[in-house]
Length: 316
Image: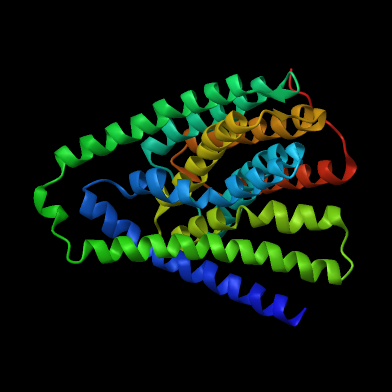
């Protein structure tokens, strides 16, 4: 118990230390590469912070728990889209750039809707996995093309940054600290929770649902504190897109996954609904404000109530 408490506290320290290291290097790496911080967030940060979702879902599938694998993907995306985005905007309203409003928000809804359509028959097959991976390619390629265009337009002197490889090393080490710290928080927090008599349901809703979203929360909230608005929503959107398309697609290529009816009739429709609401908020104005954030938190509360009460929600 004492060892678990110490490692839990160390996990929190690693999480926030890694976040500080990453956020300090994102503008430097963006300047060195002559691209926007959003490009670095989409191509590097969001993919790396999605590793917990991939690892947890992969190990669950290999242990013979395919429903948990799919549930983790959907649940983590929902927590990120509602709770993480809501907390960040409650702390400080977020200015939304044109790229976020047009590209990221649309792809985020597409990833959730496509996952829902493919899961309607109660199974995500290898063919479905290929469709998900193929759907991620245009988004990834579009971001690469945007990066190339920015590099052509940026002056060559912008890349003259001292010790770029040291910044890259610290950036990667910070991402590693975030992933490791999140894992320790989930693992040892669960040990402490069980010793305190918490039920498996409550542990799953708290430590597992939040645990795999901790990297996204740390990066997004840290970016809000530093006034890096594009990094905040860029991390939330890009992580959801990568998890919903690339992570789910890769897992289904390795092992076709059955999908429980409650996920199809409740969790995935709620994820699509949350995505549509958030897109409405970010596209009808240039800011994601506190009242809109409160709506997203309320949607998250509805999701939690659904987990405990077991009711479904089918979209027409």
